[in-house]
Length: 439
Ligand code: PMP
Image (cartoon, rainbow, N blue to C red; front, side, top):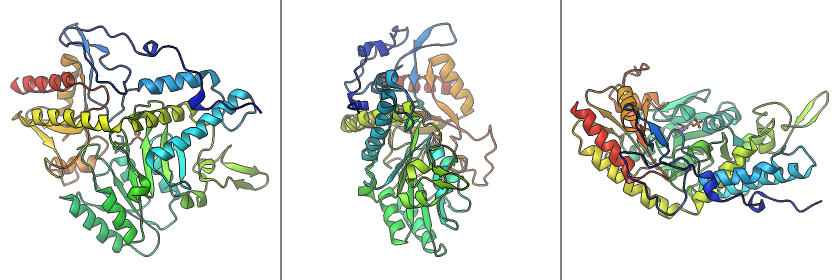
């Protein structure tokens, strides 16, 4: 058998500049000097604005989907000549592709600090990962979840105790403790986000993991908005499950991850039934014993997985510089917003709570949709508006605790940033908001 080329030993593609679209410096914004470190494709790509000009795009919508890292693009380009089936072929390309796929699993395991014997299951995204976990929890498991969760973590459970938005991190810990203690005897699961997709605030996941452990419960962490910004170590933090998406991690190729304890996953029936999940099929079917095989039926998204692993490697090598730069940008954004009297930032735990680069706000006298559209059409700025798939939480932050969060009403604007965001993008947003408020 030939020596297998793996993802890391595949030939290097042509010069990096081939992947970086030429950006025409457009009117109204200087040429951006990006700091050394990982780079994204499409930072400053020209976009049209209403008066017919093109301006460099100020992408402030990373929390929805982050742009593609150059390193991710390169990894996918390197893999493409060998692109073939996974776990199915004897041909050389198939062996290379299978090697790359399984190597990616180990990269992801080390990225999240998962225990050696944990399962690392590739899914489509975080929503898929949380639904897989909901499928695998033993019947009768008591699930405890905060109403502040993204719908991906709020909705998949057959039955869950929903805790109201806590006023402080300490209250989150005591509320979880109480709810778990009062849960019926049997399997228990606490589900919590690591970083809010609405406010960017960091949740006390280490303390919540301790509370879960004390109460004989497991903890599942929605890390979709944490891992693009901060490292996570499941073993050190005592986390049982972690879920995240590649497309928020600069790997926009449709893969996600559920990593965590293998026993429930191995005991559950396959999430999807079909080839790959079955060990043998005759009159009766014997399902694969490993959690990964059991829940990855069908041909997997191998390029998505290779992309995701390349993003994990790139970020792992750059955390210190990334976090420092992001903090400076978030400070610039938040102090600029605070200086605008007609803008109100939304947060659960006050101004000083630690957070990642996600900020939601409302503008007096303006509907969030109009703000977002005007920012796009007149300033070339991309932000998100709405309730960010966290209707109960946004309702709470906007003071609508009656649960009436009807579509189209009571929405907010969200600016989110990451690698490739520049000071100019932030300043353009602040200037635009000041001009909107003055209209
Ligand atoms: N959880 C959080 C905190 C999120 O921000 C998102 C995406 N907005 C999700 C889960 C769902 O991610 P996906 O759409 O990739 O499944």
